[in-house]
Amino acid sequence: MNFLSRKKIGTYLLALIPFVLLTLFFEIIPLVMTILRSFMVEGGTGITLDHYVAIFTKPLYQQAIVNSLIISIASACVGIVIGFFGAKAGNSTDSKTKTWFMTILNMTSNFAGVPLAFSYMIMFGSTGVFVIIGSKLGIDALAHFDLYTVTGLAFIYIYFQIPLATLLLFPAFEGIRKEWIDSVKLLGGSMWEFWKSVGIPVLTPAILGTMSVLFANALAAYATAYALLQNNFSLLPIRITEQFVGDIVQRPAFGSALAVVMMLLMVLAVLLQNYMVKKQGGRNQ
Amino acid sequence: MTEKPNSKPIILLICFYLILPILMTFIYSICMEWRDILPHGLTFRYYIEIFTDMEFLIAIVRTIIISVVPVVICTVTVLLAMYVILLYLPGLDKYMQILTMIPYSIQGVILSIGVLSLYANAPMPLSNRFVMLTGTYCIIILPYIYRGIKNCMTTINAKNLIESAQILGASKAYAFFSIIIPNILSGIKVSLMLSMAIIFGDFVVVNIIGGNYYQTVQIYLYRALFRSGQLSSAIIVVLFLITMALSAGVYAYKKPHHDQEEI
Image (cartoon, rainbow over all chains, first blue to last red):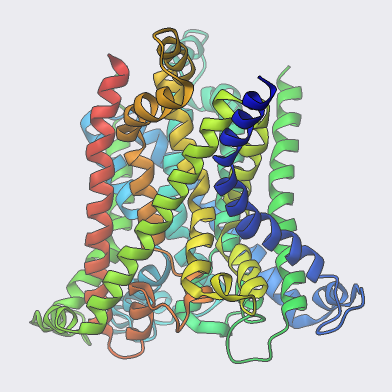
């Protein structure tokens, strides 16, 4: 009996082995090693905090962090505003239009990375179609638009934030009941007052949650910027990868420290979101 | 409630904004020249060029292989683990949930540099670029595969089904592999195709780990950017159509599944 049950334990645990091996070799060990390596001397064995000091004191890396933050926050903010109105419009229209809208959002959410960067080069690059139109028609803002800047890149990032924000906010708007609007109207309130004191507070958790997804999404985006300017764009993901692959001298320990900084920024975004949702919840009570 | 008059223009505007880059890329790919306000001359020679380029076709085959293999491995792995956790060790479920959520928040860049720097000089099976790519993609799609399988198991109420099968004399393993798995396979097709679409469109992981060793269509496209604009836009249109076919598949499977749920 004892032998039988022991054999049974052995058999079913075998089924767990592939999952354990997969997550161990390709998730846990790589992550733990990245964190450990970030404290190691480059090519040596000692422990050091030099990499972190360098990241926060050298202008090259400070700028990468600042640029990444500006682009992520700006594109997330614009994305959430457009997504808000998009999801609101999508929920108040007939179901056929809504289905079409959702299909287009799903379809365009696949259009990212290298293809997206290239299509913007066609439109707004130095010889882009809209730039040519702008210079022929004398529209300065178009004629002198520079895609290869922080503003230009944020402009491209907004494109992929819109479908994501709208799709993520859709379910939240479905939760807003028509009766609530009727009640506010019955009490003499306007639509503006409804959104100010009922709609927005109800949607706040969803908005903040979506914001942190958009932020993380933009922060980790690599392909678009890389396709546009290769390693010449000072962004966190680009500065990280060039320490491991490419032409410059490889510095895996320093690159790992940069990766840890990026991870911390993502964790920070989630914590901030949780804190604000909690604060909001407390105020509502 | 009466329909708000301002909802349709907003939807139209957003759709126009989102479709514009794709449309422009398509027009660019079929014209001879676009150096003025309007494009000149219609041509399909860029499409002919890519479809007669062996390198492109090989890259497509490579991309299909790398999009399918990790999805199969990851699905089998998660199903086996779920079998143990559902029937024998339910306490481990929360750890499995954490493990499947981590890749969602760390994303491609950090995971790929972690894997690359660890295994680039490791002993043979691990230092093979295809093995590294497969392993990394398995982790990247893990959240979607896990969610898909978990949702299906909840929908069909897997635990009750197994208990009923046991009352009728079936063993746990038999119940899981010949009753539960066939029942959820149709439901997880959506997550499988979504995962394939994610890998198909990936550039980050393959550029860092694959590089010169495993050239997928995304790498092929990236190299084409420096050769010819029209050629690149033709590649983009082809890739977009393939991705759309994948999502259309997701959509087609999603619908009957929802109907089932309603019944």
